[in-house]
Image 1: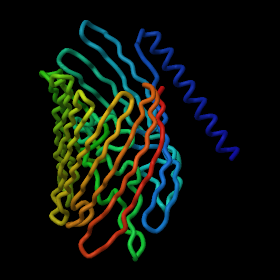
Image 2: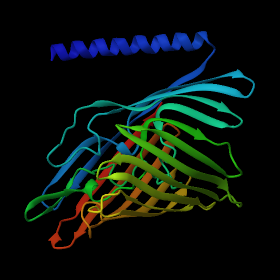
Image 3: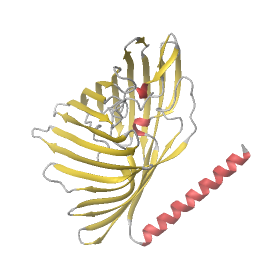
Length: 359
């Protein structure tokens, strides 16, 4: 314990010195910068049909993190900027299970990028979102901190059970197929073309090349109504038997002036291995927002993820109280079920409550 604390002290000291040095360097160059982040913790009670347990976890729907961002105009209409963001998850909600109640805390790289911004668009270099990342997660319900199309971010490692014991984990049977996430890439985002902008990226995910493209829409549609949508494509060149893995999908969400909102999403993913079926995912949500209060019910469905013929479903209800710009308090119920030909599995249920504080 003494050695661990010593190492921890050295690491914190080094981090503090780095932050101070960064601050001095940025200030010296009149660079506009800021530090921000959040802490997001939850309690979830899980019942898999055989046993029930309470877990204390970091909410991976919107994990604990901190970031440095900054930008400076170096010529008329031209800006250079940085986005450096690190996640810190102590007991991630996507990693806990009945057999793993505690997961070691880890730092994980989210963004480490520089960018150039001009009237002709934005070019980003380094670790960051692929062009289509988030395209399956467009959602105006105000409840994404407790539930959204990423139905495995809370509880994905819990396993379905039957008489034979533990079966497949939830996240092996369903997922929102949200393209290739974050990796080292170069990305171009066009300026607004009316209500739409386009994104393209190319990069490396491990040893694989990744290509992505997406179209994004965000607009007011009159009468105080809002519409947001995305459509994306990604190709990961895996090589070997898998060949190319192609993912196509999108999502759309409308928020009416009276607070009612509706969200739909869906996509498919397949590679060149003829032995593996095409994965399919669909998602729907209906919600209502009034002032600081938002509530919604949702449904997700995955087909042929683990085995051909599998149908994995998720049902949920969530509530969020946006007490302040910096504070969300939330609660939700969720149930997962798996239909597999020739097998019978118990449902897995979650009752969750938590809070997110931003700084």
